[in-house]
Image 1 (cartoon, helix red, strand yellow):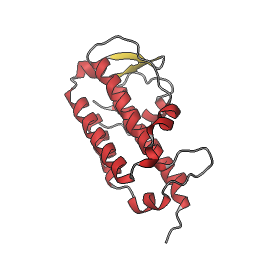
Image 2: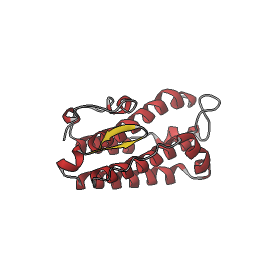
Image 3: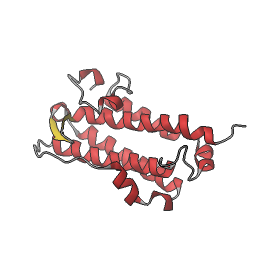
Length: 175
């Protein structure tokens, strides 16, 4: 199903969904994997644990955040696709970042995990039929369509890769 089949987008999360082109969800996921494959690992490694501004996350934290968010939203999508009407709580991404210990992990390990989590998410969404993709549920005080969560995950990754390019890559002198 294409993004344009969404009859509405949840507030707050629309900022991620809007970043994705009007393509089939499977194509959006394919493009997101290609974006991971195209990462400039030399620049990422050169940045190391530096931040572009005091109080901001390192790239290690940023990639861990993408991983954690992907797992949380995939779980929510599974619950809602299976017609579970339990209202699910939000989560505090800063609390997760503080507790994750991403700085002790290698960037290669984080990117390997991110690719594995994304592959799992793709398989999960491929298992949903149209009825499941159209179901909704409540999390973070918002009604969320399952299909929207797929596009949200792609857009969330896009958002953070753009932040990385705009704010972290300037930390590395270009040759």
